[in-house]
Structure formats: C-alpha cells, structure tokens
Image (cartoon, rainbow, N blue to C red; front, side, top):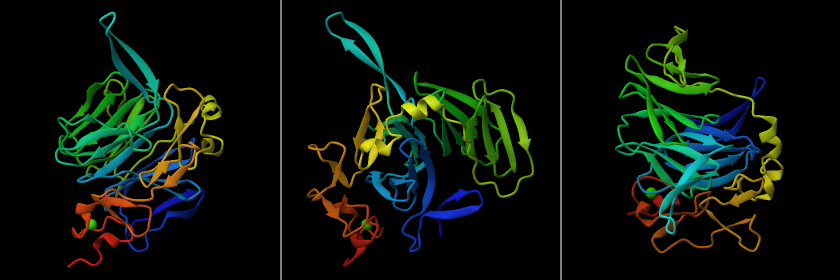
Length: 319
Ligand SMILES: [Ca+2]
C-alpha cells in the first residue's frame, strides 16, 4: 500500500491515506506559495492537487491513454517566449510572459515530456523525440531548465525552457538512474544499480564525481533551496491562496495579481471569479462518477475493467 506522508522533525503525518488502495501515488512536487502538492497516480493515471492543509483541490490532468509519472512544478518564473508575426511591418517579434507551469513525463508510447498551467490548461508537448524510458524529471527554477534521466538510453539530458534548447549532459556508463535533483551549480542523481550518488556540473555536464558510494536501496533524492524573500513576499498567492477557492497562480504578465482557476471537476463562477463551482452535469459522451473527486470520465471507460472513478462506480453493474 502506498500513502503520501509529510514529516516535521521526526513525526510523520499521513497526507493522503490510501486504505482501500484506490491510488498508487508515483511522484509529487510542491508549489510553496499557494501551498499546493501536485501528485501523479500510476493507477488512475491523473495529476491531482492537494492543499498542504490536507484538503483536496482535485484532478487537473486526465484523459484517454494518459500515463503521467514524474512531475516538476515551476512556481516562480516560468518564462515563456512567444513569437508573434506583425502583419504591418512583416517582422517577427517576441514577448516573454511569466507563467506558473507544471511539467511531467507522460509514459505513453513513445514517451513525451509535457507542460500545462496548474489547472491543466494551455497544455502542450515539449519533447516527444528520442526519449527511451525517462524516469525522473526535475526543474532548476533559477535557470528555467528541465533535467531528466533516461534509463533506457543511459542518458541525462536538459532542456532550456526559455530558449527551447536541448542538451546531452551524461551519455552512457549508468546502471539504473532514479532520483535526480539540481542545487547550486550541480546536478545530482542516484544510481540504484551501482548504489552511488553522483554529480556533474549542471551547465557543462563535466566533472562527474561520486559523492557517496555503496548506498543500498536508493529510491529518490530531493534538493531543497531557500526561496528568495522577495519572491515570497511579492507572490500574490502567499496570503490566503490569493483569495482563490481552489488553484492560485501568478498572472501571465508576472504582476502581483492572483489568477484563480479550477480543477476539472469544477468550473469558474464568472460572477465571482475567484470561486469555483462543482460542475453540474457531464457531457453526453461522459460517465458521471457517483462520488469522489473525479466527477466525469469518458464514457468508454465505463465497464472497461479498470476503475477510474475513485469510488469505482464506473465498474459497477457491468455484465
Ligand atoms: Ca473504468
């Protein structure tokens, strides 16, 4: 059975209890300003959000054939360049917006690395070529760069989100790379087969060094860095989740305005835009789960032998 826990000093609290084995949490990351925990589930194949006060926000990514696994959250910069064609002067110019974005590995065949805003909107595929078995994804929020370890291709690669540049950092001589983390000038990873913790320069990929050797049963690592006080004070979601009932993120222009959005089970109440309301009905091609955080699922998932509704109501009464 897999639960999600949190630890303060030496006492652990269960954040997500999985007593009836409805979930199989795979990976998680935290957005510290609005205090949201994003997690992927390898059983229901969705991305969900929990508040750190242990209440559920809901599912933000799901779909037919989805397999979201490792996830990385960028709460601060999320700079994204858009090229715009000016018809009058016949030139391209670009503008850079600031987004709060999430990134994840979708283990479809072939695998992809995808991005979306926190509510699953503005989703796009960043990378879909030359990915073997990308296991772990992490983000350097200062340099706006994604890193991942690919156990099948025996590689560690990076992708500069601002300029769309992909780079090979480690090529070969790996056993079973698992956790990966970036801190300061270095990229760290653990190799479960070789039982080592290694590091390289995150920029050049050089200076490969074993930090620790002969560590048994390695599963994951996580690097924690101090957030700047400026970001913490000026982020619009720090106080009371920006007034949002569900998801809060910074406006696209990077201003101090909070933008509220909703999980898939809800819709925006446009008369009070910070509030989300439960969707009242599913579309004609959807099945409505009887209870739980997942409300509507594609109708083809009804009686397909695999429970997608949290209460398994999609698999009840099947012939
Ligand atoms: Ca089903």
